[in-house]
Length: 372
Image (cartoon, rainbow, N blue to C red; front, side):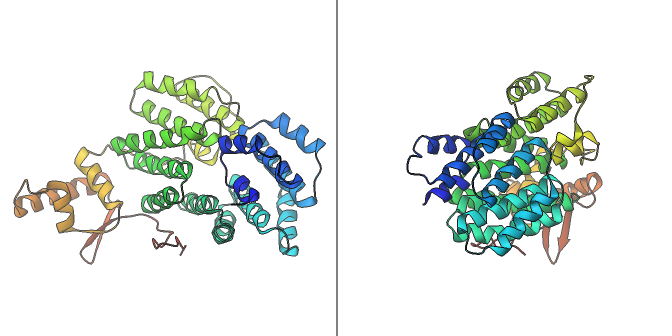
């Protein structure tokens, strides 16, 4: 694995380790390595000074500027157009930088909530990153592809897609992306009123993302757990999570933590432009909320269906095993499905003998993780 690939797919702790063995790095590699450390730390003043004192070539300077503007929450559309134009007109640029620049463009468009554009870019970016052997970053690109679709159509759940990506992330050795998938699944389960499953997944997410403590992803997971604990009225646990989040200097985390205080009745002023889109929806009261709570058996059914479509016989075997005869188990399933239909009329669909969750499907679950 060459230095460029190591840099573009490293998490914060890995970037810091690379910095101490960077004697053989080229000037452009060292420049982008340092830029990414300041970026992930959310250190606006340090990144500003570094970019001012270290001028490289046009595309790296522009990538550094866009990274700075992302954490400043002040993205300039013209910069994105200029970077894309440069990529399209300079095909001989190092393929690793091309892949990273396209990923950055996708991320910037996602930040300004141009999700349709971002989704297309992340789809394009997946294959480019995979070709340069940046497999971790490729899987992360596919995750963002699905996340963009979830913002385009928030009425559907994307649990199967997130589980597919989490599996792929672990295959390529990236627990950070797996943790991000678990964060998204936990949020989906919370939307569905399955708090037990949500808690299980968010705890797994925090454990995986703690490997990258200091970056925003870890704090977003802790914020989600804090929010869940508030909904469950476990305020002592919520307070412990809030104390963890309070250590972050990142602007978007600080504003989201203020929102937690506001939810608890505090009188705080929130800079809505600095919020991540997910927390922006919470502020605007646009976030999906469940009006019901699923029972343990209902949650078990939803979790099983999240693995894909299942027949009645498969569901009965999964839920009741050999504890009941088939007729009794079938009657229990009918009652269970009827109860679920009253709580969430469109949650489960039945088609040609199979039950499925009504969810948006973006990926084809083959070994190449190709998108539809």
